[in-house]
Length: 124
Image 1 (tube, rainbow, N blue to C red):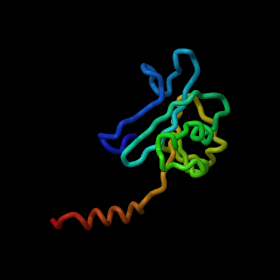
Image 2 (cartoon, rainbow, N blue to C red):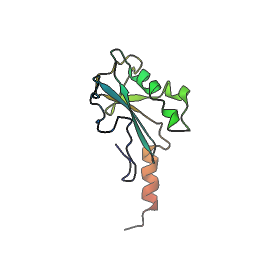
Image 3 (cartoon, rainbow, N blue to C red):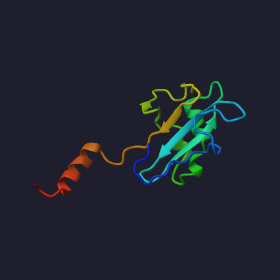
């Protein structure tokens, strides 16, 4: 889910291969997604039985794409699958075709951001 029209979605799937579909040689896939306000990365990984959400995030090597990401933070970052937060990502085994999302901490309280936007609007 890109945040802006100019944000490109990137996948590590082979050309002609849709993310989440089995590659030509067989085998199922899962995706790991991480995004900043300006960049999104979706890494496609081979699925294997018993692969957990946390293991998939660690295998995705997101710090290679985002210099400010820390492996230690990723080891405890909140995760979700298709927008639903996982209570125990270390124990949640993935199914073929699922997408794990890494959630960033909020930089500002949403209510405060709304107040600031309203204050900048000209009066009617």
